Structures are given as structure tokens and as C-alpha cells.
Length: 409
Image 1 (tube, rainbow, N blue to C red):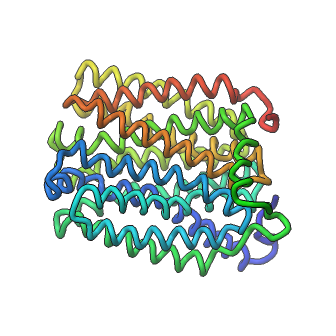
Image 2: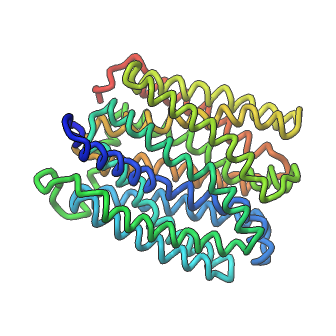
Image 3: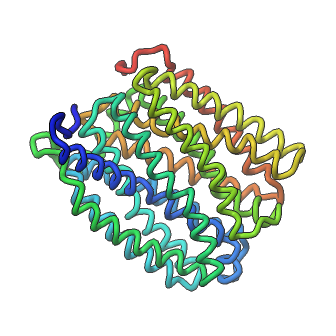
């Protein structure tokens, strides 16, 4: 695969850069839908008359929906092309966001959050498949790193925007803003992202038989190593997303409008790591940088769990290992996904969807676990992050070690 940019002209590279920017925006559906309303969770609980732990189920519902729907989008995209399933998902996301803004019970909010996730998951899974349509393995990791950088703007500013909307209006305004984001993405997709899967490369047959095609990547030991090790680190991210509204705001007294400042500190770590990854991945390769990122996450996760268990140093001591754990995502996210897609370029939709489903499935498990284990301390969140870091390291070393050939199954 090669890029679509021509060497001699300026219009084609400019269009390519615009397309990469739009693809990055499409991968931001998760951060935008999750991070922006995190500061509002205590307010949502009060407004709907439920406990904060119950309000956290709206996060778990989103994680489950976002992960499960990708299993459908992958085969659909490999059969019908990228654009039609993508636009259909964006329309569903926009309508469900409006439903969230109008919800007046916890049950209806959970239902609309699930539908919102079903639609929004089309963005990242198909954006990644489009990248694999256009680029080879290491170049795809390079582009994915750039997309991580661009999409990191969303979690950097989303909690700040959500906190300010909460102060000025209410949590419902957050979902109305997501309606506008959905409409913007629909327009940008039609205008800047062309179809990248030509008819001769589409996979025919009934949709059911295409769903069974997930058995192909699942039969690859190395694919499982890439996908599961990356998903476990994402499980730590979702543990952080689920746990920090309580830990920061309720436990340590951080004001909701200031929550985004602490959140942004950790996002800066992701940005710096993604910048570094983008600069050196073509030199050192996907496998070595993935191993390095996971090692950092494992060490930081264990340190975080120790700090939470001993209650040493308060919030400041929690923030240091938390920063390094989350920064590792700047390397782990791009390289684990590039590894998955590189093994099955002819099934990029399926490979992307399955990896994304594992990420958000792990997020749903982590979020639900934290709600169940809630004990008034930071330990459920920190312990989960430490556990997934160690497990990820074990899986990566066992199934996808850096010394093995990246091309082998």
C-alpha cells in the first residue's frame, strides 16, 4: 500500500493532510463522548436522584455499546465500503446524543448512552481501516501516531469545556454540544473522506459469513498478543476515566470546573509520547516501541496501586505514576493497532473492529469492576490500573515479543 499523495503536487498532499485531520476527528468520538461529561457525573446523579456509583453505569453502558458495535461495522465496511456504514453510524450518534440531552431518568439516559455508543463506534473503527487501506504497516503506525496527537486535543479540552458548561448551564448542554459535533463530523466526512476500499477489494457473501471471518485473526497468536496487550492498557485508561470523577472531586475535593486541569495534565503525557512515537517508529519499528510502552505502563501501574493502598502522599503522589501510565498510551495505542492491522491488511475492517471491541470491552469490565468494588478510596481504580499493566506485559512478552518477526502469524 502507498499513500495517495503525489510527489510532485501540492494539492494532493494538502488533501491528504485534510483527510488525516478528519480521520483523527472521527477517532475522537470516544474521548468526546466520555471525557466531556466526566465532571458532570456527580451533578447527573443528584439531578436524577441516584448514587454516583449508579450514574457511573452510564459509562459502562457506553463502553459495552462502543465495543460491541465495532464487531458489526468491521464486516459491513469490508463488504460495502467505508463511507456508507460510517455516515450511518454518525447519524445514529447525533440522534442518540439529542436523546441523552432530553433524558429524565437514569434508565433512559443509560439506554441513549448505549445507542450513542453504537453510532459513535463507527468513527474510530472505520477511520483506522481507512488508514490501513492507504498505508503499509510502519507508515500506518506513523500516521496513527499523528492521529493520536490530533485527537488528543479532545480529551485535553473536553473536560474543561464540560466543566464550564456545567457551571454556566447544566449537564444537558454537554450532550447538545455532542449533537453539534456529530453534525460537524457528518459534513466533514462527506466533504473530505473519499471511499478507500475499491469494489474489487470488497469481500462478498452473506453478512453472517463475514461475521464468522473473525475466526481468521483470532487464530493468529501474534494478533491476539497485539490486541489483548493493547486492550488491557486501555482497560487501565477506562479505570481512570470511571474512577477519577469520584477520586478527584469527591475524595480530594477538586472543584468540577478544575477537574479538566488535572485531566489535561495527563493528556499532555499522551501527546508527548505520541510525538516521540511518531518521530522514531520508522527507525525502531512497531514491536520494540510497543514493548517499551507496555513496560512503562506496568511499572507505573504497580507504583500507583502501592500509593493508593498506603495512602502515602495524597493526591500529588497519585498523580505522578498516573501520568506515566497514561502517557504510555501514546505508544501502546498506535503500535498495538498497527501491529493488528499489519497482519491482515486484506481484512482491515475486521482486524480494526475486533481490536477496538477488545479495548472497549476491557473498558466496560474495568468500569463495572470499579463501581462494584467502590469502597470510598482510590484503591479500586489504582489497583485495576496496576493489575492490567502487569497482565498486559505478560501477554505481550508471551504472544507478541519484540524479537519475533512482525510478519509471522
